Image 1: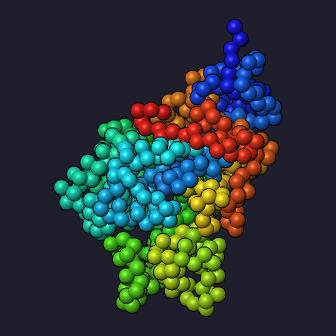
Image 2: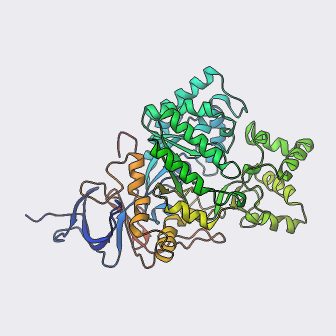
Image 3: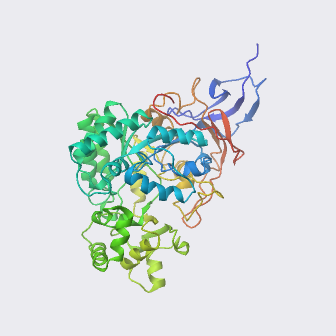
Length: 533
C-alpha cells in the first residue's frame, strides 16, 4: 500500500544539522513529524515541493532573544520566522516579565502599555500559559531573569540581600523552573544585576544546576575587564556544575580587541576540565542596548523614576556629567567615540532615530555628554541605542570556534504591525541570513554544514531538545528551505525594517509558515517546557 504524506521536499540539498556534509535527499512530513528521509515516492502526498538547487535544513534555533513582550503584541514573529528561525530562547540578560510582583509589576506595566497589553500573570507558568493562549508563530523556550527575581524581592536596591531575601529569591527561581523555565539568565552589566556579588549568583544557580537547566549570562563586563568577567562565569560553572551559556561573546572596545583569543582558550580549558560552557554570537560589529547603560551603577538605584529625578537635580546631573567625562571609567559605550553611538529608538523624539550622538550634539550646538543626558530625559531614560565597538577579526575568530552558536540578541517584530518601531539593529531581521549569505557563501568563514549545525543541532543539544535540531525520521518537522545562491540580509542600520531574501519556505511543527518567501499567517508555534520538546 502506497504511503501518503502531507508534504514532501524532493531533490533538495539536505544539510541535516549534525555537521555532516550536504547531500541530495527527499524529506517527507506527516502531521508535525519528519517520517521519511532518502529516496521517496511522492505519489499520494498532499503537497510536493521541488527542492532542486535549494538547501533544506532544520529550523534555526535563536539562542539569545528578548521577545518576551513583543510575542504577546504580535505573535507571528515574522522577523524571526522569515529568516528560518523556528525556535527562540527568551528571557535573556537577566530580564523576564516574571515573577510579576513588586517592582517587576511596576516596570512591566510601562513596557506592555506601549503595546496596549494588560499583564494578567504572576508566575512563569502563568506567563507561558498566556503566551500559548495568545498563539505563537514560533516555538519558544523561556529563561527567568535574575534581575527580575532581584527586583521582585528587594526592588532596585543597591545592596546585597539578607539571608531571608536570598532564600526568597531562590524560591522564585525554583518556582519558575517548575513552571517551565529552562534556566536562569543574568545581566551583570545592568542594574539591578550589577548590584549582585558573585556569591549571590552562585546560590541562585545552584537551583538551576539541581534541575539540570541552563545558566545564561550577559557577563559583568565585555570591555576592559573582559577576562575577569569570563573568570567569574567559569567560577560559577565550577561551583555549581551548571550548564553555562555566555551570551553574545565579544570584546566590545578597541582597547581589548584580540582578547577573544584568550577568552576562548579559557573556555576550552574549562570544558577540558569537565565543565559545560558554550557561547552565542551575532554577526555584527555593533551591539545594541539602552542609552542609560552608559550611566554609572549608582544612577540606576531606585529604577527609572529615580534616574529621571537625578537628571532633574543640578547637583546629581553634574555628578553624572563628571562620570561620563571620566576616561578611566569602563562600561558600555565608553571610549568608542560619539560618532559610534547611534540612537535607534527614542520614543520621546522620533526625529533622533538613526542619528549619532555626535550628529545630534552638532545640530544642537551642544556638548555630547550633555546631549546624552538630554536625550535620556526626552524618553524617561528608556532609549534604544546601537554601539559600534567590535572588531571584524574578533567576530570571525569567535564564529569559527566549535562552541559558538547563533543568537540574534533581538526582539521579534513584524513590519506593519504594532511592534514596528524606531530603527532597531539590523540583526533583528538579518542575523541568520547574514551568516549564510555573507560569512558562508561570500566569505567562506564557515562551511554550510558548520553554520547550519551552529544554528540548529548544537543549540538543540544545549537546550535538551531531543526531537528538534536535526533532520531525521521521528524529529519534529521544523524545517527551512532556502536558496544558497541568493540568501542574504537586506536590513541596514539606516533602513532596518526589511526581511531577508532567499528563504523560500519555513515549516513550524509541520505547518507551512513561510511560503514562496511570504508569511502564511500560520501560528503553529508552541511553548517548549523542559518536560516537552
